[in-house]
Image (cartoon, rainbow, N blue to C red; front, top):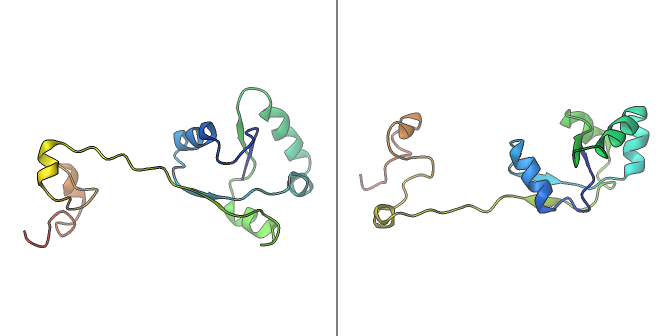
Length: 123
């Protein structure tokens, strides 16, 4: 669970901050600040006070199991799905060859994947 000063959980700058922390795909739910304050008490006040200093985002709770069990299904707002758009880069060579698997590439990278992932059925 995070606290943020952004006006929307879909704000592009927030998405950049999450991606910088390795969170590239997620489902977000807005929950009542009053409920969070009641649940976390003084810790909420400390983290909220720290939020206004330099960063736009603070982690309230890293225990997803605890967060999930602390709210009923009717409390959060609708789910907000985020998945970054894929960037496709094609070279003249790649345009001629079919994509075998997105994780396969020139050696040594394809050595991490079984040969069946990195070969097409015709090979």
